Structure formats: C-alpha cells, structure tokens
Image (tube, rainbow, N blue to C red; front, side):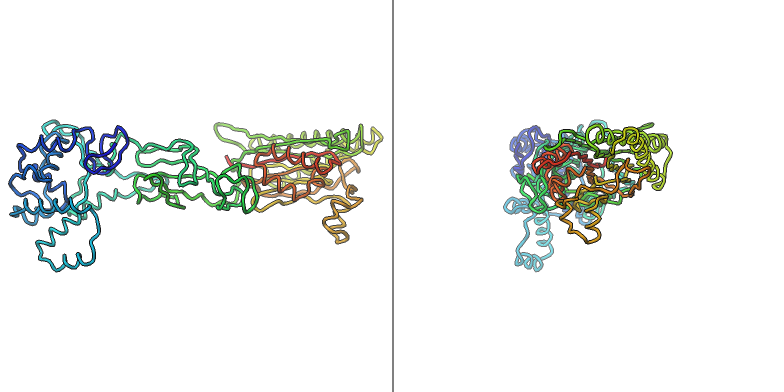
Length: 581
C-alpha cells in the first residue's frame, strides 16, 4: 500500500503509514483539503505550526489561505482526529508570543520544504551564507533545515468525549533484571522544547496491538542465514533461530558456498549447519538486550537484524545436562565365518520431580578369542558380568542420588573388569580351552568420561581438535613401537601385529588400564575392535567422522570401508555423539 502523502510503501491493510503516520483509512489528502478549506480557525493554524516543526514559532492569529500547504496539513490533522486540534505552545511561542508576520513566514518555509527534500544537507557555501544572514533569516533557515514529516498520532475519540486513560511509558525490565533507560524519543523531545515530555504519545509508529510480522521458515537473510524457527515474537523485536549456510560446523571456516558438500578448509561434510540466534529490531539504531553481544548487524529488504554472538564454550561442569546419540554395528568380515565380537550400549537419564538426574552411559566392545565355542562365549560372558557389576555398584547408587567421587567410580569400574576376568577364567578352566577376550569400556557420567581397557580394542575421542586415541594397545608390536624397536606404521603390517600379551580370562588376575577425562558437547566417542582400526586406520576413522554427522551412518560407513580394505577380522564399532540439552 502506497501512502498518498509521502509515497512510502506499507503493508496491505495497514491503518497508518509507517513513514509519516498518515491515517490510511481516511479519504485521500486532496479530498480532505477541499473539505476542510472552509471554517478553519486559529486552532487549526496552531496545529499546522506544531505539525511542521516542534519548537518552532506558532500561535499567531489569523486564518491561513485555503490553498496553502499549511492549511492542508492542518485540515488533515482535524479530519484524522475528528475534532479541532488544541493549541500547543512551543519554545518560540513562549519567548516571543504574538509575533507578527508569522503566517507569511510559515508559508515561505513550507514552500521551500516542498522544493528541497527534508533532511538534505546543505553545501558549505550555503552554511556560510546562513551564518552571515540577519537573525530573522537565520531562524527561517533553521526551520527549513529541520522540517521532517512528523507522524500524525490518531485520537481514538472526539475532543468532546470523555478523556481516555493516558498511556505511560514505563521502564522495561531486561532479562538479567536490569532496568532499561527511558526511550530515546522522550529525551530528544525534552532537549528540543525544554518542556516536560509528552509521554502519552507512543514512540513507535505501529499500533499498540499490531506486532511485527515474523519471517517464514526457510527465508534466507543476507544470502547466508536461513530461518529455521521463531523463538520469540514481541511488538518491536523478533528472535529467530537461523542456520549459517557458509560456516563449517567442525572448524568454523566461513568461506564455504551454500551449495558446497564439504568444507574447503577441513573437509568435513556440510550436511549439518551451525545454529545461531538472530534478533530483528524495528529501529536500525537499536542495541542488543542486556547481557547479549552483537556479532554483526544485517539488513534484509529494509529490515534490521542483530546477529547475537554465541557464549564462549566454557569448561564442562558436573551435572551439566547432556544427551547421547548412539550408533553401533558389528560384522563378521569377509574372511571369518563366525563373529566372536560382542558390543554393548547402555544409556540412562532419570528425571525426578521435573529435575534431571545424572546422565549415564556405558559403552563397551569385547573381541573374543579361541574360535568356535570359545571366543564368542568369552566376549559375551565378559560383557554380561561387566554390565551387572556396573549397574549394581555405580548406576543404582547414582540413581538414588548418592554422589561418588571420580576415584570411587574408577575403582568400581576396575573391579567390574576384574570380575569379568574371574568369570571368563573359570569358564575357560571348566571348558578346558584357551578362550579369552579383549575388553574396552567407557563410562560417561554427565561431563566425566571413565575409561577401562584390557587388550587391543581401542577408544577414541574426536572433536574440533581432531582424533585422539585414549587407550594403549596391549600387543607385542605396540610395545616395540613404544620402545623404538619398530616404526609406528608397522603396527598395521608387522607379522606379529595380532599377538597380545594381556587379555580378559587368560590369567587368574588381570591388570586394567584406567583413566578419567572430561567431556564437552560436540565430542564423539569411538569404541572399536582391532578388526576395524587395522583395516581403516586412524586416518580413515577421522575421514568418516568428517564425512558423516550421524553416529549410525558413521558406524555403517566404517564397517563398509573395513570390508573394502579386506575384512580380515571381525568388525565392531560404537560411535557416541555427546550433545547439550
């Protein structure tokens, strides 16, 4: 909808012009002028002066010419309000009441304003002429410079009706409890007129009941941010969740094209986009709410947006709510007929009285040895005993609200591994065979990671810093590499690479490697057997982590690539994505 006065563009069905405040439901301005040319009084004259310049001279006696612009604006104000405008004294009136010749001066000012756009800066030579001009001319020139279209504030009832309750602009309490200062428009009016500010006039041109219209989902802002959700819509602000089409979720590189499949810097798959918060504001000069930092100011189709900076990633603390996304896969491979591996994924997230308790997770991989009727029995039995002991000695106490120190948890996890060794060793003696199993388990309690390990299965952590191996192989070749007797790459090719010197069930007692680490949202845990890491290697695991953002899809791809590399052994893997709630 186009405003007939200022020709500004408004939304369809708008009641008032967002640029000059004109009541768009009234007849065109020309008709209002013709209807109001007769019977204008001194009060209308005053309304004209007040409408053209707050603080300018107004209040002289005598009617204005029907054809003048002053008369048209005053008539328009009368038609909108439905009653004669009341006289409003300005600063000039108080200092020189009844100044003669005011009518001609106001007419000249309005004529000049029609020829030159409001607010246009003067050339330097014009400013110099203005300084040299007499005082009367300087006043008129100042008025000419300051003339800008002022919003016409509609009155809901006629002047002779009962007065409406005054709308008072009160301080607004921010999110952190601070109180914001009065609106800037009140301060500006007070500084111009020197009088008490009229706080019954809204500082925003929209109707009180008309909120800002939010953008629809899928709208792309500044060719970079796509709207995914509207979090909060207020009268003068709208908070969005948006996804960044340029930025890599893994390394933060911002030079990717929206249609690129992989990051140009780190090679990560761009099938997922980082989520950010974008605040739309009605005023281009608006500041961020208290406690927020503006990372960038954006403009889109005449609308202003503030990109809110994400808070710094702080060190994880106890009882920080997280959740797990888990994927797992086990495969016999291409060479062996029997799959002797066993894997376990167990997660618990209790909630009592609307309060979430500790988030717990147990993830373990066991690689059995001993062939038919041996390896698969050993791996299964080891996981069963481990899980039983962890639930009874750790998880149940956590569910009851009994907090345990890191040292206590790691001791109980080591005892669970040793109990598994006892059961497998007894079963081995009864069966009279040489069965045994490797076993690697990770226990997650909120932001804490507890690792227990025997054999050559592995646990990794992957995040923005890359792939980190958390365990040490209990194999002959790994010992040779550690002592300098073999090169690191020989761990994949040495003839004795499968010979291990420590496993579960081989001896009456077993030494368990343990460690306590911290976790943070965004970390991934990978627990796998040697049939995976020997075939894919660390570089291949990292490539899959970059390529697949979903844990189950990552597991499937890892097993597929292990088989493509030969599939010489059983293949088992668990991938755990740690996310903040």
